[in-house]
Image (cartoon, rainbow, N blue to C red; front, top):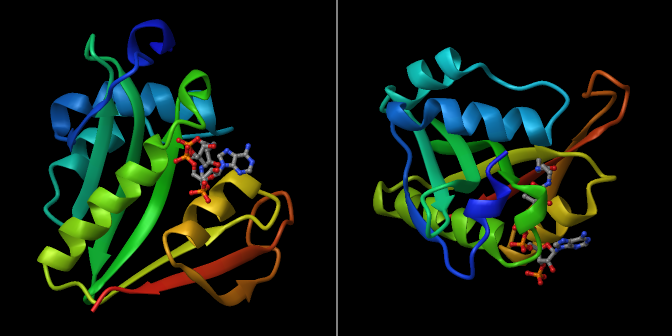
Length: 155
Ligand SMILES: CC(C)(COP(=O)(O)OP(=O)(O)OC[C@H]1O[C@@H](n2cnc3c(N)ncnc32)[C@H](O)[C@@H]1OP(=O)(O)O)[C@@H](O)C(=O)NCCC(=O)NCCS
């Protein structure tokens, strides 16, 4: 984890590229029970259909990221995570706003995602950005929890 150097008062947001794969994979594995390997991220970040942004601290450490893929005119948010030491400072909200702005510029008309009903910070993040519940996938997660399907019209 890069918390000490990643969590200064200011973050710089930028598009992620394959050179960021190791940092993204490390942060993802610190935030989720399982995560993509650096190799999987390097391949994904080289794919033009994959759209990912990172928030970097003043010393260059990765404090948060959002990873999405585009398909059939839709943007799907695959993952968003912020270093536990950096949460509650608006980082995820800024990352989400950036990715939605880029999607609108690419004329993508809709954004969708799945989220656990028990994940209060993530739900708050998406509701604040204007997402609405569009459905429920029963027992979607490996531990049996349902997933809320949320969508946002971008057009
Ligand atoms: C979800 C997550 C990305 C939010 O990151 P963050 O940078 O702390 O979020 P922000 O500071 O931008 O806050 C986003 C919203 O959530 C709210 N929020 C933040 N932490 C919260 C908490 N612990 N409980 C309830 N709401 C919370 C904020 O108030 C804000 O809402 P607002 O815009 O209405 O004020 C972060 O908690 C995380 O990495 N969690 C683990 C990974 C995860 O679950 N990702 C989501 C997968 S679907």
